[in-house]
Amino acid sequence: MDRVPALRKRSRLHEGRLPRRRESARQAMPIPDETAEPDGSLVRRVLDGDKQAFTTLVDRHAPTCLRFAVRMLGNREDAEDALQESLIRAYRAIGTFDHRASFKTWLLTILVNQCRTAAARRARRLRRVTSDEAALERATVDSDAGALEAAYEIERALDVLDTAHREAFLLKHVEQLEYDTMAEITGVGVSALKMRVKRACARLQAALQEVHDVQP
Image 1 (cartoon, one colour):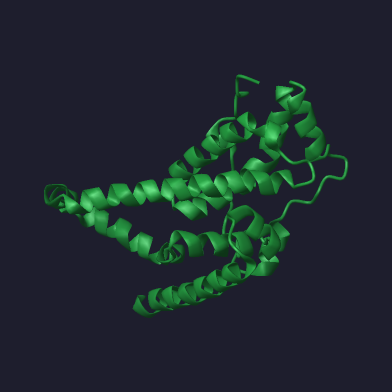
Image 2 (cartoon, one colour; image 1 turned 90 degrees about the vertical axis):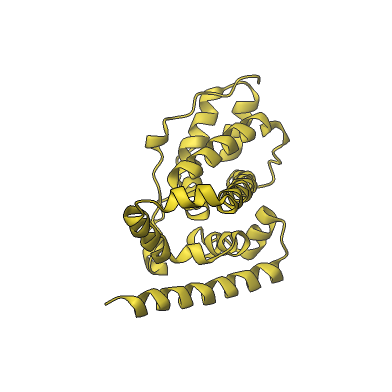
């Protein structure tokens, strides 16, 4: 298994929308196809050299993974890069997959780690930029467009959360995972995850209220 099968173009991956209500999230969930081949069977076919089977796994799980990555990283380009890298890593490491586990959970574990790496890399890049006074001055020239973009960013409530709290909130309230599954994916204990979700909800409510208060 020395080559990764060609992945579909990024434009074929669909970004999910954060539902306003839990009922909306349930309506948006795809109806399971009872005739579809189970993930475990597809994994076994991949191990036997069937690259098309991995493409089927990608088609099945990439939309959910991309939705999570977009919400975690804040923009589609970084999210697609993280997803592409996760899929490559998953293909190369598929021999380590435990068939007693969920393939979706296993893939999300890889993606969560990639998102953490991407977020840390971006934070370091931002620190370098803001520490460079000349670069900062150049960035503020003709800042009308930048101001509009900044206003848009402020309205995105998820941006108030750090990586750990955003991660927990998305896994619980967007992906609707159980805490035990979240713990398996993140490597964080259930109690700590519950606290992160609670704090994330409180911060989001405060941010949304602040945006509402400043609107005319």
